[in-house]
Length: 362
Image 1 (cartoon, helix red, strand yellow):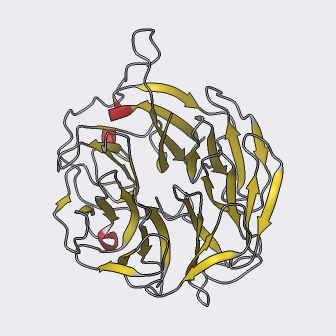
Image 2: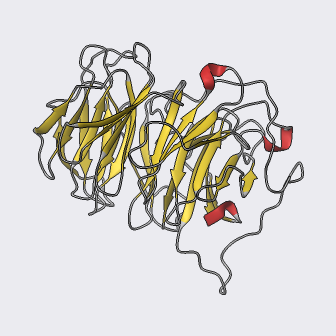
């Protein structure tokens, strides 16, 4: 999960040296191409890259090879998600209108586009229906005409529009029960609103502990994690008991200018910190129930801004820093569970592109 409303021209940079990748690639590394009959990967890591020509790259798990590279229709890509069928959804042209481009599984050209003005976040449910958050009239951190639109899977058919309880939505998530979670980021109505499947009326509204919310994540038991750290908010991650607004823990130790969170299948929490723009940043790692990190990852980290995990609980980190050697700037790195050292890092496809978002899927 990453801060949904960052724009491609506004990322922070750092001034230290990236070290510790398992294998140092050449200035123009050539990764093996996936797709042989002997090796059909069950899942990919999807990386959207901004802001040159824009692209979406599908890497084999562990970043061991490139499966496909999508360029058509990927101008200024932003938040990305992948549904259970392998369909890719990407918010593109964020600097202008924030439309959502869809790619059916295996397609390298757009299959359809939803002209949802100023889309800010996307998510899908178990039926592969698409949720798109937007606020065409919003000014940063303030209220405006906001909604979450729900589209039938694989189509542009609008099923319903949710407006009640929505105020400048900046992040979305769907749990295993298909409940929808919406982060509202306006100064005056900071909250997380939750909606039952098929409903446009809030099931509950969470406000306690929500101070400058920027991103959310869910663990396998549907405990909710809210990352706070936007302007006016305290840098914290708050965990809430599943299906309630009860706070289980509030984490402050090991958190500094948090940029993204992720939770793996064992409920281990990962928090990406950019250290307030000073230094390379860190990834803080918290076991279930702990409020102090078990360890921090520094090797391979260079202003981290997006995280995801795969089915084997490998952690993927997207870096936006300039402190690395040229051949590793803006790299995406992968870490085995419980490891402080990256298995490998791959740089941005183009020299000046930044990894804007990460996702895992079939």
